[in-house]
Length: 194
Image 1 (cartoon, rainbow, N blue to C red):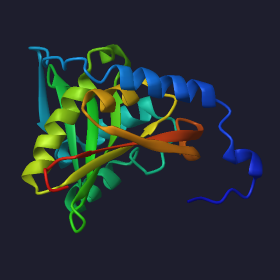
Image 2 (image 1 turned 90 degrees about the vertical axis):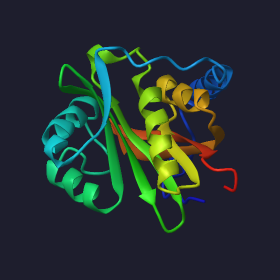
Image 3 (image 1 turned 135 degrees about the horizontal axis):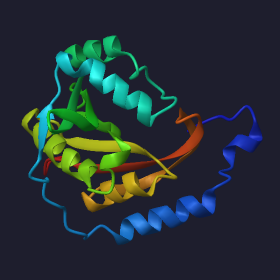
């Protein structure tokens, strides 16, 4: 449920584009997942990675709903409820994502996906997501979800390919990458009892 003080904000200017991206993502759901390139490695990030992580987030997102541009914020959330994952290539982080856990309710938001421009197109996000899901299952988390940028074909395709169900669009919901954007919600049970 939401309330828009400005009535014009409740209409998505790019509704047709959003619909076509959802259709495209759903049509890609059976596309097989790739293998991790031999020169890359998936890691769980630690405090020692926070400065490099914040630099990547600054490059990928001019604005973001949370202060992921601040290494201190990243370190603080590592200690409380967020597990960050990265892909290294030649000992340099090239892609990131995070699992923001709600341990009490046994759910997790799969979020903060960022890949440096020179490494895009290799399906690194889905490889990160696969590792994140395994990790969250080991934590006893039952349900994973994301709030993906509705105008981002890549992220919507990633979650569809990983077996997530589309459950709606939050219209003009989030200040990200320099403007207010609509977001798509995708979810997936991680355990049979979810």
